[in-house]
Length: 136
Image: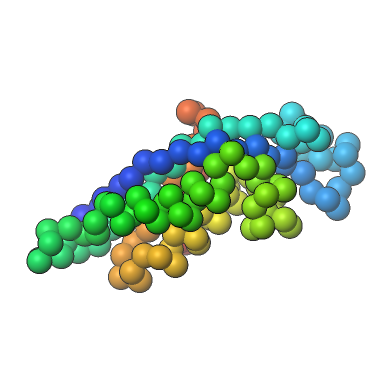
């Protein structure tokens, strides 16, 4: 029997969507107002879900406090109130789209979760726009 536990978190960050190898005009055509040279920000919401068997001793899949600590250390401390393009090394050469951000977050958390557990990360860039990554 497998059960999924989830933890919500949030962080505020600025970014600019653009490619260094494209002209400003092409970036503007593809990314529109998200190509603002002065950046723009989002209040990101995050749901991290871990699926696995219930431990017979503890009754937990995983202690939610442990998951909370992982999210704080790997995501909130690294991304909150940062400029993703300038302050987060993973985005030095990676366009910080919601799709790329969710994969980076998943990879950071995955290394801290037991391999027998499944991991899913849902990232809300706005209340109506969100992306999901399961490691596929």
